Image 1 (cartoon, protein in one colour):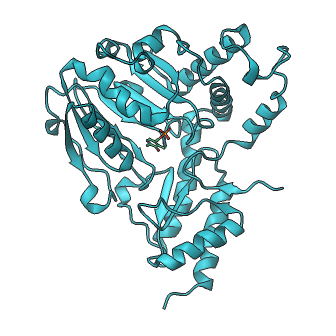
Image 2 (image 1 turned 90 degrees about the vertical axis):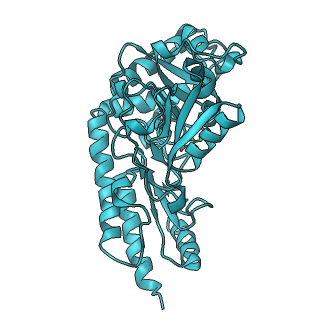
Length: 363
Ligand SMILES: *Cc1c(COP(=O)(O)O)cnc(C)c1O
């Protein structure tokens, strides 16, 4: 069977060469005589895998030495609780920007824990079709941190800039744009991301945290949520998500071999431009997101007719273009074009869109 172009928002496509490499060592890893899945996480072979994964990610993202890299479990959603539990004690309050569903969930989770949290900006009233402007004077001067979601997976928006927060640590959910382009890690206090969008299969959550922010955990902190404990134990306080970390390592290696994040960015820009340029050149499909907030990873569009949208997703699927149906809260279509989506996949999508528009005229 042929592989399809999978536009899923996550779990999503992995590079073919990575899958093939993993397959080639699935049963026997190196000289170990066993699969990575069967290995003790304390074995020398596995110690090397997790150390390489971290070293490669540090190189790829140019992570400064005063940041810890953690490979955790629980998904990005667990960090919605872990962030306030690890940081709020710094001052007792925190600010949030609600630019979509995930940042809304992060905000609600902190509220649920009973903390003094404030939503300082939202684009909810416009169905999250843009990212709100955030300036330093909007943030409470004694906020323990400002939380943002950098790329809004469901709506297809992204911050066109990194908000300036001065001394206040910026905490960002980068689940759907991590390692898609170079980013200045030093502008952030904490970066976190689920693996299954752009790094690996599901099961691992990356946390990159500045060392001076490890000292504010709540007294009654669940140990598994405490970044400091995880940092002191090299992400191995308990059994880490071993196989997913191994897969992430292969993905980091793949990007390094391509030439790093600058090259990745150029490839991603080229793919996104192909799709957005087409969307801007016609009026059969509409891209609801404001231009300056457009995501390079998740591209949303609609025909304006719910039945046509449905037909589009179903016919595209038959043509080998999978998972183009938009999120249930937005409708329409969404093409997630992460690192592993080849340029040819976007070309095939645009060709299909043209054909579909021709064959399905609107009255
Ligand atoms: C997918 C996603 C999440 C949720 O991730 P889980 O790993 O399923 O908890 C959170 N934030 C963003 C931006 C996402 O894209």
